[in-house]
Length: 475
Image 1: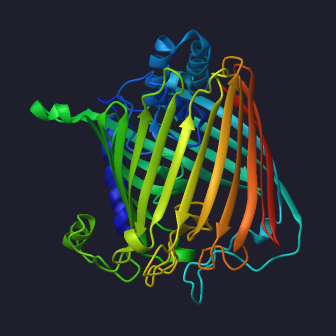
Image 2 (image 1 turned 90 degrees about the horizontal axis):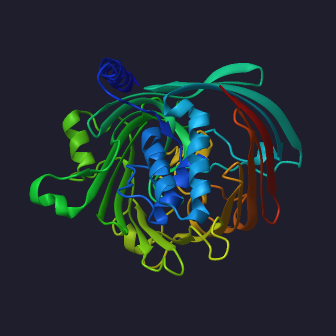
């Protein structure tokens, strides 16, 4: 812990030292509506050179994308793009400063059966499911205050009668580079990533490109690049006092329609490895395979040249969790297609995604588990990777629809999951389950936003239902 605190202190000093001559901005999480709007506009070919280093995107980059699309969109989409840009300015004070207050009420059925944050005592090493509990309902309320000013943002939450620090970030930029220290989620790859799915906020130090870069001289013809790396500490109750998580991603856009990526995460430190900087550099460069747990993947995203009659984006991921030859025998495979604008209903966006994690031939081992890092690819009680929680398959369909200049937003999804016996959620959630979620966001006034959301997943002998409502005031 001392090493990461020291690194955080140095990064913090650099951040505050740099704010006098830099023009920094903080990041929006992958779940933020403006990030999804920017992705959709890029898929429609309305913006150029949009290539985030990871799925948490700098506010300044999202603002640029929305502004560019608001000028170049067709008349059918221009009002929506302009509404998104206006809403971002209202919400974030022109992407420079602001203050907001949120009040939430949530209801959760069978809340006690979801997952257990306790470390396992026997194999499978990273089990996070409890035994079935009797059906019941839990409910609660929380309040959250947010503030942001140029180089930083912080959220304070009040829940269960206690105040605590939610997400926070301080950042500085030097040219195309961004250095930040804080707590927020990390997501890799399009859709729901196998390595990092942005489901958990992490305390971390991060170095990344704030916007795409091109190599000098004749190498400019190779296209745009983006890079990100972070270092985080994992929670002690599950992982032990010395466990750390390191991640990195390289994105390459050789053609305006094609983006390629390589992502890697490594969990290490439980038994003192790596013991020095040399060992860490060897591990990071993949020149030495020590006692760390690695999850890595390659991704692609392609904007199909059919926009004249059907705009379509296809994406995919091929991942592996440690193991010699695991990428062949026990891979993680994910493929999806998205229509950012449906013919006859141009504001409607729909998509579908299929994921498979498990044995194809020859070998077998459980994903997101490790003989030494016995806490598993988990933070607290949530998977860091795919929400399946390891070996299994999922088919998911989704749709989103903004209306009235983006003042009203509707998001829907449905999924079918099959978790295998060596999944992190087994034995309780082994087998087939069906589920879905719905969310509605409405901004009746410039400074007022109302939202409701619900999710349900049900298997043979269990079910989980969550509902929430939120009111936000922005000043």
